[in-house]
Figure 1 (tube, rainbow, N blue to C red):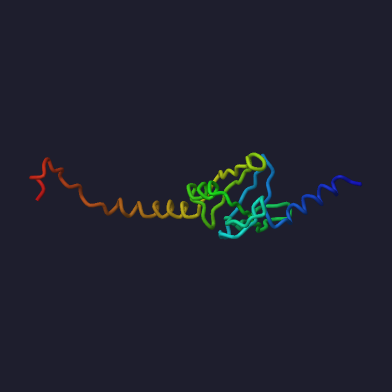
Figure 2: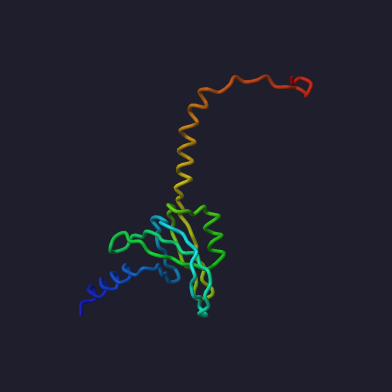
Length: 146
């Protein structure tokens, strides 16, 4: 049997999976966070718990597809908050470790609100500079202020 056929088949099946699943040392580029929600999910012991669910666009061998990523770790949610991840953000998600030693790391973050804020600041900076008030003389003491 031709191994390229098997490789193609495996890549196609991996691309078609609705969930993101990484092995230790693997990474995936999240092109865009489409939605975030809190869902019920069974943990490793079969007990229901709350988990953060991200619906994301990823580039696969079958093109750009929307997949789901779930994580019930508070540390992961804090990492997303600290990095400003929101709907519209893009980032790289990497897995390090196995089973209970697993850590997911978020890098290469691009946030849409940061880009919008930066561009708005640039646009507003020019008019403000042109209409700046004349400099006021510096007061030497509180008695000089009237």
